[in-house]
Each structure stands twice: as C-alpha cells, then as structure tokens.
Length: 314
Image (cartoon, rainbow, N blue to C red; front, side, top):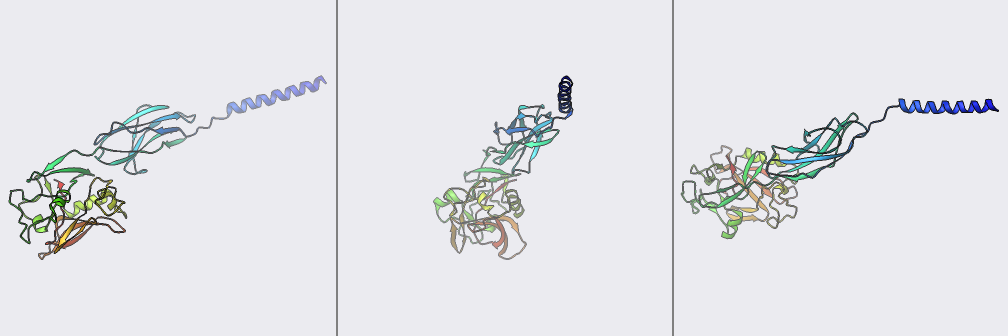
C-alpha cells in the first residue's frame, strides 16, 4: 500500500513539475496595442494638435506611437509622437491648408505590428483676408489647395484705371438684371471686358485661366456630384444637396445671351483663356448647373455672352 501511495505521489509531482516547466518555457503571446484617438485641439488656419491614448501595450513594448492625418481616411501623412510606452501623447500638425477638412487617427506599434485608433476629423479656420475693388466693394477670400480665390462674384463697374465699363457697348459691359441681385450675385461681364488691357480684377488679383479652374476641380474632386461641394448652401440654389464644403460659395447668378436666364440653377464664370479663334466664338468658361450629375466643367462660348467672374490671387 505504501509503495502504491509513493508511486501516486511521484506521479503527481512529475505532472506538476511538467506543467510548471512547460508554462515557464512557453513564450507570452504578444497582441496588438489598444488605443483611442483624441479630439483635435488648438486648430488654426494651418496647424493643429492631435494625439491619442494607449491603454494597453498588448503585452509587448510600444516601440512607436504617433498620428496620421489627411483629407481622406486612408491617404494620410504620419508623424511620430514623443516618447514610447502606454499613456497619452500629443503631436503638432503643421503645413495644413486653411478652411480644409482633415481626418486624424492615432497609431501605436509593438512587435506584433501596428494598430490605429478611431478616426476623428476637424476643419482648419477660414481665411480672414479681404480685398477691395476700385468701387470700394469688399470681397471675402478662401484658400483652396494652393490657390486663393474670392468667395464672391465680381461686381465692379470700373476698370483698374477708373474708366467706367460701358454697359451700352456690345463689346464691353457689366450686365445686372437687378440692382439687389447684383449686390448678392455680382455682375455679368462679356469676355471683351475680361480681355480689356485696363483690367477688371483688383491689383494683385486676376481673372483665372482655364488651367486654374481645372486645378480647382482636381483639388475638390472630379467625381459625380463634386459640384455640391462648390455650391453655396442655403436657399441660393434650387438644389437641396448643396453643401459648400469647399468654401468656394458658388452662386447661381445666371447668364445673359440676348435674354437673362438661369438664376437659381446656373452659375457660369469666364476664364481669361481664349482658344485663339479671332471670331466671336472662342473664349473659355466654366459652368456649374443643377443637373443629375453636378460638376464644374469647361467649354467655349460666344465672347458677347455675359457671365460671372470669380478672381484668383496672383
């Protein structure tokens, strides 16, 4: 009996020793870190402060932590934060564009790999720059990408040298269907007024080229419905989907071609670009209208037609 008890005790001891040795020899499995993204703070026109909070290192040392940001989720720039390990951290974000929506998410890396926190977004402050024309009209501006645009349509009645734009002339004029409309929607100009050497735009500004409009479109996005991002929100457009997310504040001022038409559903802006045609037809414009596929597109028009003008900074 005693031998049997001794044998049982030896077996139990052997099992316990085996379990102990196995558990000691087995490596601890590392998992991905656990973290959240902080709300962005200290937002200016071109900078902000982001951060995160790492609540678990996943049983592995945090070797890198930081934030990633961009105008769309998944196409971010990334920046390493100060320090390593768990806990909260902050990182400055610089070289941003004014009046632009950005997405931010924190990240942390250990030997297992990288994990991202939840995505948050913020919008940089809007420009406060204003510009005056020769009539004393004051225009707000907006930075979109690398361009600075007027947020309002031109409404000046004189060239830079003080000469009055001759509204009775068929080759140079500033049409206004109604004075109250002109104050909000600006005036409509023939391309001959655009091309006049005396200049329509305030000093330091110019009527954009067709290429500059194309650059604007490519920055905003060329997909179906991109025009909603340009359209002034509110009751200006006969289009409830207008968001003006870009800040461009496009207004449906209509157009003039023998008759006035399009207010509320059409915006057309002259460019300074000619296709070289010496005849009446041959100047480029960009049109935004209320259609199923809303987008800003370029075409040629008769130079006698009267359209809006939106200036861009030199």
